Length: 362
Ligand SMILES: NC(=O)c1ccc[n+]([C@@H]2O[C@H](COP(=O)([O-])OP(=O)(O)OC[C@H]3O[C@@H](n4cnc5c(N)ncnc54)[C@H](OP(=O)(O)O)[C@@H]3O)[C@@H](O)[C@H]2O)c1
Image (cartoon, rainbow, N blue to C red; front, side, top):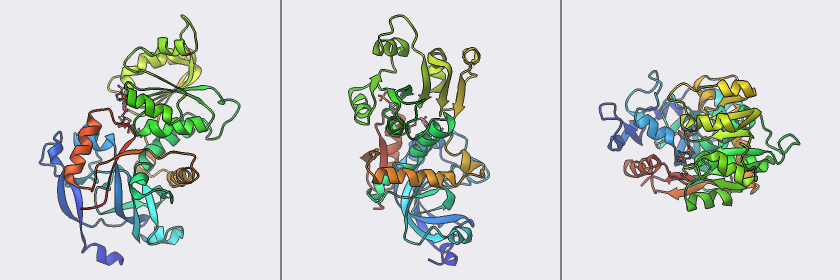
């Protein structure tokens, strides 16, 4: 496709208009919008399938501030997609590693228009080659959660993707294991040689965590310390966990995590806190709090933003080698406002297992 033709092209998209109440799922509308303008580093991706994430529901509900510089109405959400390269900006083309027709997957940039559209423009440094062994729907489930899990474990907590003597058999506690991020974090952590204890409240979410390789599952609706102590038969003593990844609610588990984290251990948080966090106990233990936000690299155009492309290529290779199981569990059908409203409702209920995806255009 010629770049000059794009500006003439209209595309289908699901978007929000600002004058509609943002806390209303009915605000998601089927729209016809101009094709996105390409920046020099961009790939233009013809979207075949999308993954739906809590960031979409939070942005729609106005709980997560969008960047006002770029989110002119109508706002198109969607930060997980698989699709085909249809055109390239000059620097993406000059890079030499992309070709028209290549199938890619990516999460993109939360400060730009998203992928709930027939066409999305994404910086090529944030894109990976989609797994050859998966269809577009299964591939679209992976980028955002895969990047979060990978960056959280191997960049923020400082673990290594392959087993090493310092982490082999050591415990990682994952709070909220059955959701999108947890479904990949369990697998990556087990592959790295860790003993993974995760949390889930329901028989089906427990079963999913065990199927993905968790060594044990405890219930996050009950106090965690006695359940962890019972697993290791530590009567009375508070277990000390070297690594804790909280994928659910930083405030709600803060006191428990501060009590449970081992001296010189680390807590990973991916959900912003609502109130100040008391770090007193962490100081006494020389323990660390690490934040992971998978849009940091895109948002600040960090010098290493191409690391996200490498992580995605690595995840793709692990999927194709059968070392990671795909995490898409629910395909709600073609990409449309009606189906996205359904996806948002399911995510907002808080009990998603694996990932929700939509694929194709009706
Ligand atoms: N910082 C980042 O870069 C980043 C990236 C991705 C996601 N996030 C955020 O991380 C959170 C998780 O994302 P996700 O995609 O994994 O979500 P998700 O798929 O919607 O997670 C659903 C799972 O969360 C569990 N859960 C619900 N309430 C919980 C609680 N109070 N404590 C522990 N677990 C609970 C549920 O387990 P049961 O049904 O068994 O209770 C369910 O299986 C979201 O808030 C999301 O916005 C941040």
